Image (cartoon, rainbow, N blue to C red; front, top):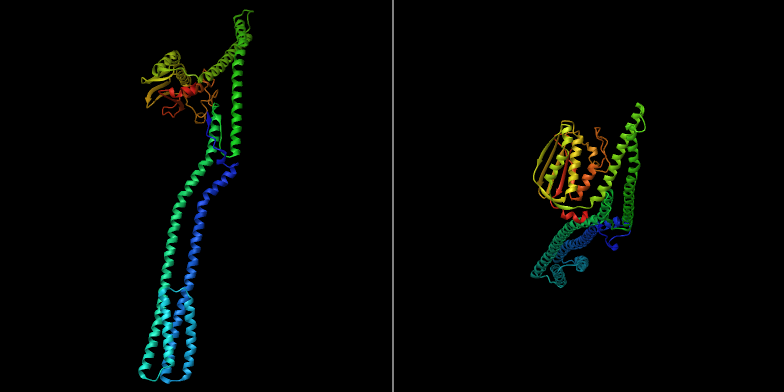
Length: 491
């Protein structure tokens, strides 16, 4: 079994720092592209606006000047036709030169077809009028025709000005539409960039979090004493190296666990032989086999007997611990009635209950499930024994058994002092008795609840301490009705 999946090396850079930098680059890339496009649109719009404004301003200035020049030409022509002064023709020629220069500059501007047509019509009209003016005769009809022609010339110049103003309006409207398109494009880019950025951020976060989550799972499994799963951590090379060190640590812990079990098994058996000799010797001394004992000697022999009994109990606890750990992974599954097992356990503790005046309240529903009868009997026996031990004389212990969905729920409560919150996390650890130890007639070894947890977990269930409204300790065991799904794991 492996913890996590090992991604191909090409998916990750060599170091975690490089992975972070690459992640920030991926997340920032859409924003950089969006800002670049925005800058390009703004620059394009600014250039278009500057060009359009400059051309429109030049065309408008030239058109206004054209109107003023045609007006001046009309005024000088009227004066010449009235006064018939040759000097006025010189003034006309000078004004006409300015007129031609202005029309030449206007013709170089990027005018549209209508504006260019009006300009050419104005130039042709002025040329015809000038030729007529030079060869005119003093006939009234001819003078009137010339004056009417210059009036028409002024109107043509005003048409060119109006056309230029209309062109300015069109350019402004074009810039407005361009700005609207740019704004719409930027909004669309923003609408696409935000989900893309979120998607990349989530993807990169998952990519970064995966090896960290694998490390966390590996450390949690090692802390829980689950050494059967090989540790494999993907990601950058430094995190993979760290995963390799955790795998080395797992192998070392397995070796230490095996050494500990070997030590407990052999030392416990080796201690029983001299302990038996000590107990037999102290009993012979107490019986007076080697002669009568004085009161101080009898007190010393009594202490030896008590301590030897206590030492034997500790050795038995060590052996029970070793046997429990070795048998956790082996389940002898079969269909059983858990309510009957609870009744049998209560019957086995009847003398202890009666001796202390403790009353047992049973609320047992008939429940059948698949499990190991001996291990489940040990679970119930340890919980009941724990409840009796910590209940005061004349107290009440309660046992409730019910089916809840696909699970069997067993509640065991007592009327004792309860379990302090700071002890609840470690109450199921091996040999842990907590800071608030029981000071009654029987001293515990810290193995009962640990065995309960191991056997319950082997069945795929869980055991926990829950709050009790009536006071005292309240343990709740939840076991699946069908343990077949856990047969492979247990074996």
